[in-house]
Amino acid sequence: MAIQYLPTELTEVTRLVARFVDQELRPIVEDYESRQRFPVAFMPKMGELGFFGAAFPEAVGGTNLGKLGQSLIVQELSKASGGIGATVLVQVLSIYPIFRYGTPAQQETYLLPGIQGQKIACIAVTEPNHGSDVAGIETTAVRDGTGYRLNGSKMFITNSPFADFLVVAAKTENHAADPHHQITLFIVERNNPGLQVGPHLQKLGWFTSETAPVYLDNCWVPETAVIGEAGQGFYYIMDDFNFERLLLSAQCVGLAEEALNIALRYARERTQFGQPIGAFQAIRHKLAAMATQIEAGRLLLLEAASQADQGQDSAIKTASMAKYFCAEMVNRVAYDAIQVLGGAGYLRDYPLERIYRDARILPIGGGTSEIQLNIIARQLGL
Image (cartoon, rainbow, N blue to C red; front, side, top):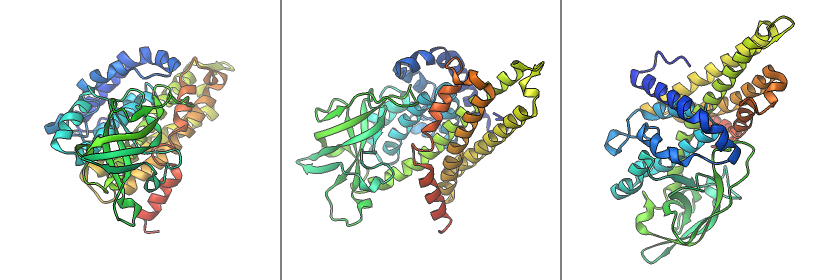
């Protein structure tokens, strides 16, 4: 990655994360991949190094490196494993609404420990019958004394098997005809007797990202568990999703860079017909095209994150462009990288097969490619 034109502090944090990946994560990742578990013990250390705090100001315990800084951190971590990158980005996205809309007490109890990696968070929005259609969620929150009673189920909830608290989206009682004004966000502690986390889901990829369904059965939470204003949760979620698109784009770039580096090394070392396979035009052109696609995605991500940090109106459109392009790009790159390695790329001896599997979720999770195209079209006035 050409980072020489980035601000010095972003260059330094990128190198810090790269060293952490090489020294701490690469040696253990295959073990955790084989067990389909996330190395939870690393969370406090990653918090101490600032991996969860880039997008937050120093006043709340962050490092004030913006969404661009957080994107670069996720990009580097994803080179070790897509699942590890996913776990980190979900931690950040789960505490982000508390930073944006939470009370000082909520920030002290959940945001600061979340940034430090002392408390692990997840965000529960997706349901068995509602993924892209956030406004259609069926989980309810009914007034009960000095709080609310939540009922419903959530699906594909990353970090839920080991989270200390969840940010849960539910429909609250109000008279708004528009379903977009019926959703509220709640903080639910893991030890709440009305909360149950289901079995660990067996996925195609992201093995080091632990994912499970979540069930809310007469789950009572106090009024103080409400994040921001009741009925405004849909808009809080959309704000969070705009950030998510940047972080997932960053994961795409990281995975694609890792795949290209593996393919380049192999093309230099593998010989056929008396010469390295990288000397053959078919391979050279494939690698050159892969590098070009990655660079285009990386620059689009940097632009989208910079626009978001500057609060530009175009940030929504550019974030969706980055998510769409990068998610499709990483799947093409992973496919072509395996082709360069041939039969070796199909073996688990090389991490390419893992990258190939990890990449497949990216045009789906965090808003499908089709949803991104809808958003872009709307931003174009169509």
